[in-house]
Image 1: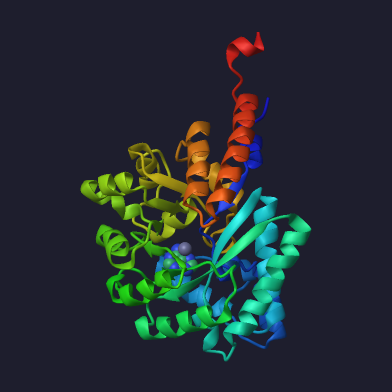
Image 2 (image 1 turned 180 degrees about the vertical axis):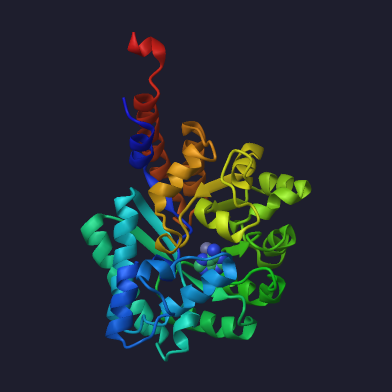
Length: 349
Ligand code: ADE
Ligand code: ZN
């Protein structure tokens, strides 16, 4: 027999909503700041840096910590450490965001960042077997022109693991529509697209991201529960929501993680919902803890988690053959784990 937490740990997992800079460990933030002579905001212990009351406060610290990541080797280190933590939490495939625009301010070139990130991905693949893809995030606070310049760099790099683009940073005052042309050009060039929406902003940002940006994936999306017609539409169209329980409890209006939380209501309604960790050390969590919160607090059953993982494979940006192979293998593995965790009584007799 497995305990619930052993069962959760052993589930094969994807991580589809994770930010590179949000994964910088407190000790690494302190090392890099010291090495690169960058001042972190005042704090008594590095861990104390990572406490916030809302998305704005969080993003200020996220940016301040990102300021100390400068060389290709710094990017290699934070990428490697992020993927090491993913592997320790049984994630085998990771599609992660990073925020090139926060580093441009300090003169870091896109190629320097990507050289380091790719080196970290290669090292993590060799050491932990975890496979990964990069999603540069367009900072919605900086406007479409800056985003277009970033897209030029992404396309010029011709790196196939630069698999798509996202849209992130402060949501509520910055709706998605101004990014329509940029997202159309990215899609035409073969990039996949996703957008943060309905986290701190309204359900209209979810509809706007689907209609104006052409996304089939929404990062967070909790405000969908305020618009039942939109819920039905997202269910009919198979929109995937990459949810992050610990972040939702700080940056959305729904701060209590229980069976009434939007993440659970979304899953109960039949929406496709995956469990992810967003900015793990910055929210004192990791992917395993997010699965424990989904199970222990939101009340996700083993079958709901099975469905969520398989929906994640389907909504991932792997190619169709890889998706089929993974779905078959993981479904069998999860079924065996469920049988071990919840043996059918007659089998015990
Ligand atoms: N960047 C990192 N985490 C984020 C979040 N939760 N919302 C918007 N932008 C982010
Ligand atoms: Zn995010």
